[in-house]
Length: 397
Picture (cartoon, one colour):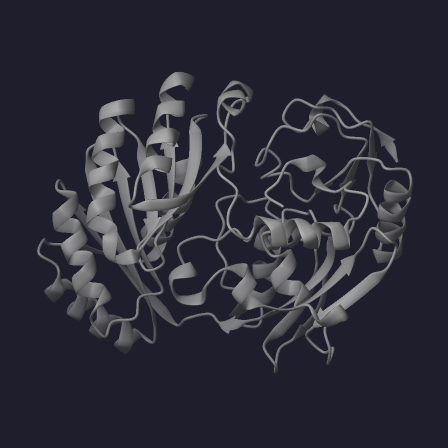
């Protein structure tokens, strides 16, 4: 245990003390003591998403998972792995690659940990084929505020108290308990891959091409769009055997109305790194939102309106699932206007402000209007965290 410093601050609030438990028992004991003494507590993994959420009024304890950082079991034959919450996703996939396997989750942040990825349910372009961390999680161990360590899924026959704890904690932002370790199903690393990269001046033309590919028999691993200033890009990643990749690329090119580049090797990796990280470049506000996949054309029209308000913006989107990130590099009043415009739109929903300055958070609630399931979420919070200490009321639960 040590005193908090400016380097530990969460939205400018310095925690009173920092605790780094060495194992599950210490983690559970720390949460139990904090709950008993009603100490406001925040969980931290790699710290890449600590700014997501409402500003905390105060933080008594920041609990770091830095010492819970090992790959516990890799069952090569079963293609599953159990890993500590504090292990980085990048390190895990390097270890799995030794056996030709990977956990198909991509992330914009090198330091992102397993606990943070699951806790935020954050995902990248390969969500198109493999879903979010919630979809790949088959087991979880949690430390609760009453001092218990509970397991669910994986090799456990019955879930604790009848709940699917893995799904509950995915996207809970550390509001229900602390993830000790997680068990995932894995996939073989594809033998080959290639990416189609097409550029458009007209968002509606791009949307028509997206629909052509979406309604075909093609199965891209990732299928994304990007708006950067006035230019749109369509990017489709195909990964399988060399013959299957070649055939799918040729079929996809025939469906597009514009010529597309075929990118492989190191440049292909650079493209998808850019796709994941471009919304997080610079210091602008970052907004997450969703839409019905069939309404991409209307979303491109909305983005045109947004650029009339804010000037050039960067938007990336998963077209198969209707999920996007928008970066707004403008003054705070303009950022407020864009968030309000998105929340008034009939074409997008679930508009959440992820990265924002303290001034912007004073003018906009980061999570927006309470969803219809808010009452059920509050009841779960009361059940798992009766003293209300976890996540310092930063939301969304």
